[in-house]
Length: 383
Ligand SMILES: *Cc1c(COP(=O)(O)O)cnc(C)c1O
Image 1 (cartoon, rainbow, N blue to C red):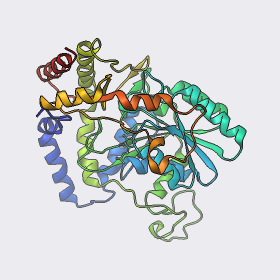
Image 2 (image 1 turned 45 degrees about the vertical axis):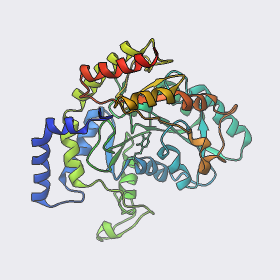
Image 3 (image 1 turned 90 degrees about the vertical axis):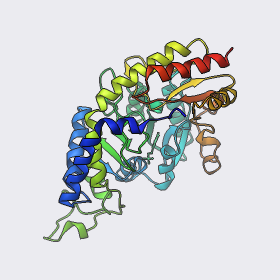
């Protein structure tokens, strides 16, 4: 069986560095908020060239932290795509706010800025909810249209979060999403382009005061600089707000430092894999991915569209080639989310894509030989 994502190949490449990094943590014993946590945060900020990073327990908490820090809650509307992983909308009702689903563009599968604008205007006219924030998603690794989304957000006075769980490391016109968004988030779930060996996440912001509040929230609302006088008490036991426990383990930070060191190189390798797929598959699939002009995708997934998606998946499975469907049911069609509002005219593109998308094996260590087997199998299905 060909692996869908080959984490073993990556591990073999950096195993000695990982072993040494893990051994250093076992030697110093600071398993929670150890020195590697701060070091990773500094390296993540440097990698993005802007903003300040704060690590946390997973990519879902990374989305919740800014919403909590902005005190978004009941009566607020937060706009997001429906064609995404559940974590994107899930954090919105956590705060008491209401998700408002927006459709995607048919070529990039990312948030449609015009439909976003229309959805916000409709909410403003209706007056029931206060538009507060937008969560854009870098679906399958490719950057959303941040210049246009940020312009819509500025015009309506909304905060912008870039959910880069899949797209962290991707750029648009040479810049990371944090150049446009108020906050960019990522996930270190093992299968993400920058994944650890367990759960983890991070938030980036250019706003120092927001960073401080999120630092507080990730440790039970501990008092931080800017909070009322500490009077000499240990800030750990002075709670300035209601927070949570969302720390990144030191061991994960140590592992991620080693993975970040080869991340640029891996992103470059992913471009070659994507280009080979595009060349081999463009004429036999309904679509191969279109990346936004000026964009670099991290290719978290390589997703093609096919009129007989399920037939093709079965054909490939029989040949030992795994595939996956992201996402078979858009979030606004899932029972717990079905009653939340959506933009005017519904979400026809999200619904159509759910029927045709198929993700192929994708990782930086996919060899041309194996890739050619996958391409040949897909071409054979088309006869
Ligand atoms: C994976 C993912 C998340 C959540 O990350 P976790 O670390 O699994 O909590 C959020 N948004 C998107 C788009 C994702 O793909």
